Amino acid sequence: MKTIVETATGLSKYVFEDAAEVAMSSDNIVTPNFIIGDLNSNNSTMHEGVTPPENWTGNRYTFDGTTWTANPDWVDPATLEEEGE
Image (cartoon, rainbow, N blue to C red; front, side):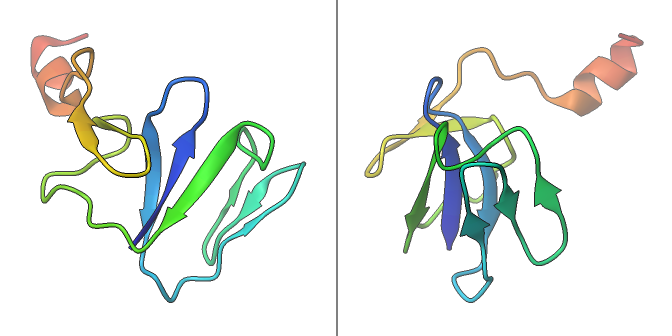
């Protein structure tokens, strides 16, 4: 797998299969199914050959190139919906 990590926060924003073609430029990141407009080669890093946690979801973990760490500020969106927030 590969992950795109926001440099400023270390948050793992997206994961893709190794075979997925992901192209980073200074303007955006082009993936097989969508374009990421708020991340680019200047503010994010792509790590390849990684194994994300089984319960990975965007922003739930930080990744420093070696270690996955749970984000203490992450809140399950389903919990927010249940609470009516």
